[in-house]
Length: 86
Image (cartoon, rainbow, N blue to C red; front, top):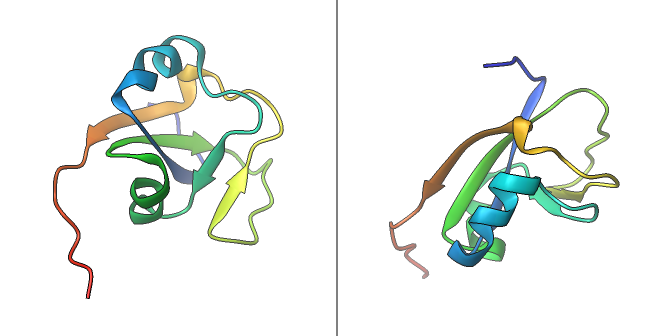
């Protein structure tokens, strides 16, 4: 596994998984610094993706300006735990 400077998350629906694994993430895709945010805004299937220092992160989420290849995918998990909202 390659070492990256930071790891971010992308949540999605099951129907998008195959395309992402094959082609990577399109330009304009959003990523989150926290798994919980990726799940809340994207879906129960969470990709953990490695990034290098070529990003400037100033907020809890960011949008990439170029395609992210599937080789940067570290893992994919289905989150099944329900969140308690008070």
